[in-house]
Image 1 (cartoon, rainbow, N blue to C red):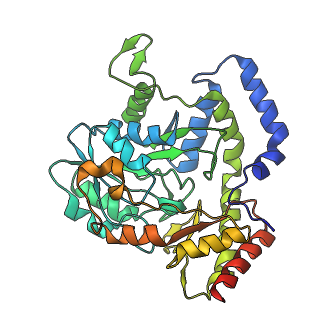
Image 2 (cartoon, rainbow, N blue to C red; image 1 turned 135 degrees about the vertical axis):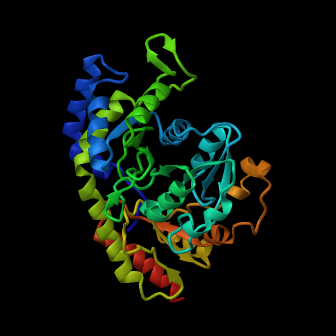
Image 3 (cartoon, helix red, strand yellow; image 1 turned 60 degrees about the vertical axis):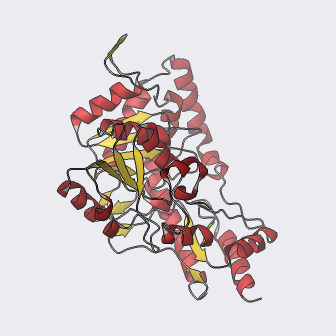
Length: 367
């Protein structure tokens, strides 16, 4: 039985009539840019995240950049973040003219090691940008405490973690939250899309100005802004899916439980870790295994799809060579890049498919 890594059609097909009607209504409305569905989604998403405000933007990458700009990050500043993440995290910092300052990860969680952040703070540090990787919240109590003691902004990269919780609060409610609505995310649309959450009213107004060419009034441009507005049609899709999000996350968590039950006895595998104070959303179910590439090849031969997130840490990427890092600078991140393997976990995955994937994994280790 082939086991796909992700199949969005299984989620969309039961919603076809509702999606079709809503999309046609929006298409015929003639209101396509910053229309009523964007405004309603912003209200609904803010409530969901436990934030006072939400602003729709064009992509997850834009959400990080605009949040950093709104937080006051300027050329010459430094922003502390993780080297083990998607490139957009550090790209957004560079777009601002700032420098990414990496802190190694906790090998259990794959998130930035909060205990090492303070040593990287300098006079140039303007913000901390933790990444809630794979759907697991970073240690936000410690990070917020460090930020407050050093008068730093906190911008959360929530791209993979919509709905995740830490100490009973949803991500995006601790600082400025940057979200992605890419189709493979827990809450995804039919293309690119993103949002920024904040509890600060002036920041909300500033982001709305930034996303619309720096304009507070038509044809009057107060600052150099961006063209980064969430599409009305994408907002329609997201409004239909948002009420389903918690149930979809629970399906992911149930799938994760099946994996735990079937793989916990394999000593060669390190399973995902969920701290007591966190609620993992399992945007990815990522294991660690020493002979990762051989296991992945075996799974492929058995028809089981898998993915490697991420094979090269950011400090070793050619695009960031100007920062002067070398192999060995962030050993935990470098160890992870050689060992991580993400297994299928999407909500509509069947128990039979998970059984098939686990059988193939057990078969490999019994050889």
